[in-house]
Length: 78
Image 1 (cartoon, one colour):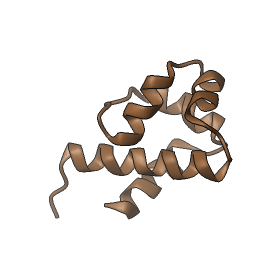
Image 2 (cartoon, one colour):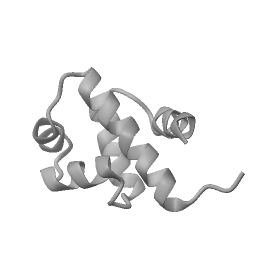
Image 3 (cartoon, rainbow, N blue to C red):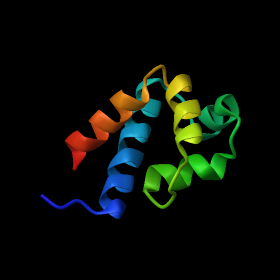
Image 4 (tube, rainbow, N blue to C red):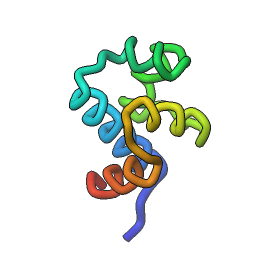
């Protein structure tokens, strides 16, 4: 099966959004905790931002998860 980068980014964003909401965090709160700009969280969740591994790691830590779990969750959404 062939998967596009756009599909992967969208699925990853959906996974971040779901985990953020499960922890009852706003985009602004997650951004503040991860020390990133709130617009980055919104763009990431929409799949219109290609994050670095470092940024994803910051988000994963604040969502009490791992990069592996984020990517596994995103893969299930594809």
